[in-house]
Length: 98
Image (cartoon, rainbow, N blue to C red; front, side):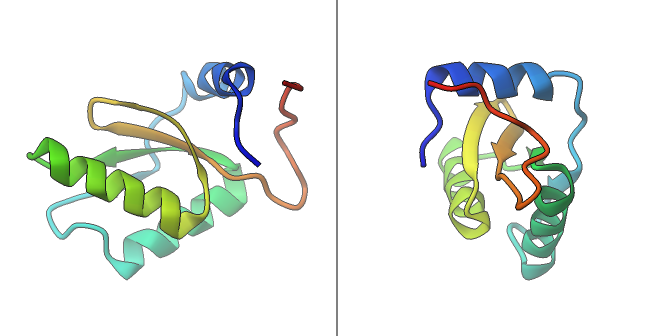
């Protein structure tokens, strides 16, 4: 499953008032950070993550690793803030059809 533009726009609207729930700091992407991201996705489905990386390429690598490791979908990435989505069994967020 991939997200189409209509679904991404819908999720961006839902994510707008959210604050980052996970921060990726100087230690990078550790097992503890990945576990916290997994827990937050299981609880919320849609979360924001703050990635503190000086280098643009490093930040891109961290973002790609987060999406791959958490098996989530990238909704958007603006500056240091990353928004990702992963549906749960309960499907709390019902996406519009394509």
